[in-house]
Length: 543
Image (cartoon, rainbow, N blue to C red):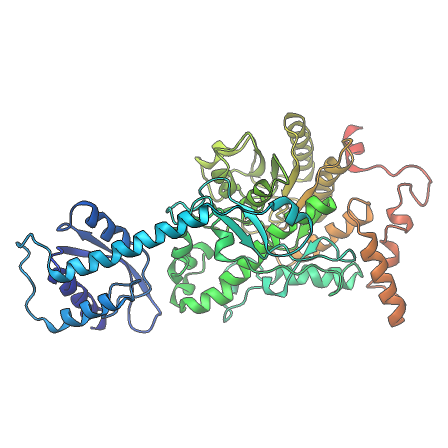
């Protein structure tokens, strides 16, 4: 009954001001904010410039229709308008073509607000931005990112200098490995309704800490990406759509999420994803500074600027590349997507930038998302069949990556290292062993580090993986890269050694740090047993 009264009240307000209404645009929450329903509004009785302005003003996602002023306008004029309208029981005839005095008051108010907004935008556009690349290289927060083109698809902002707090200061003794406890998702057990292990990221960190590689002092903790950060790529209409639980339920593929109040969804679902997105953006800058970086989370490759899906709500890969381009740190980038699913999100985003962003995608052609349009954005498309095994898979990864790097010389490789290609994965439907995944990751890093005079920085994100043992495999692969000398941080190793000496740790079997440090025989350029140069996977493929 309350929803009917709300609709009736809004209709009377608009009819009283010579506005013909048939339906209502936006979304309305029934009773306590549990369920939101989409509705639409048409303004047949309003014409010309004022009509367009009123349509633009009201046709936006609305938190709730409530008796009172039109949503988004809290001025005294509209408050008076509402109170006067509520007391008037006889609406003006719709045949009267002249606007009422109240309509003129509202029109003048909105015109004034629009003019003030335009003046503010013009004043900001004339301000000189600081040198973004110089500020970024210092490693200090509050870095300005100069937008090179309008990013807000709805025209809310254009060519504005963007301030971000994501680029936190990183000490020399910290690994370029990004993780936060805020990554992990949990909301009343509903996360278990999806096969994705929403606590995978914390398990990866725990395994690496047990192995003696990481500690709380040597990990880099990211900040949550703000709305201003997200608008570098995303449209404001898409960001606003995430304020509705039913939208998030569709993206996460967990229908009961639609029944939760949106403030719960924001905190328990979207905030962790925004923090992981901030981690990917930070890791991209770290990769350019250190030569490599790993975000323990991220890899939301199904999300584009204006649509989400497949548990991907924010386009972190697109954002990381856009930030680097706008900072002037890179001119060209390559995305190597080895998740079992097609990376349709970033393919859509960079479809008009294929000269700057080269995408190589190896995926199972028979599974989600079947996005034929997005395939146009993939420069090197490698489609696999069900249950492809190690030998065929690794051979294709090696040969196609070799050809891709011959065709294109990137300034950074963004490596989407999804582990849903693991045998037994309910969604990936491939048959790659745990050892095959370790070898795959090693191939990518060896191509970037060993096969050229100037190594290519690598940003690795962990993406999909829908089995409980995925975290262990990701950790083992990172340890393997460290053991092979493909990643390293001498200052972090020394800090960890001093910490162990100070605490008197003797090195338990579960923490074999002595066997995996860069100074040990396992990571030496020569084999500790034969004295011969240790061959990498690329040497094996060449033979």
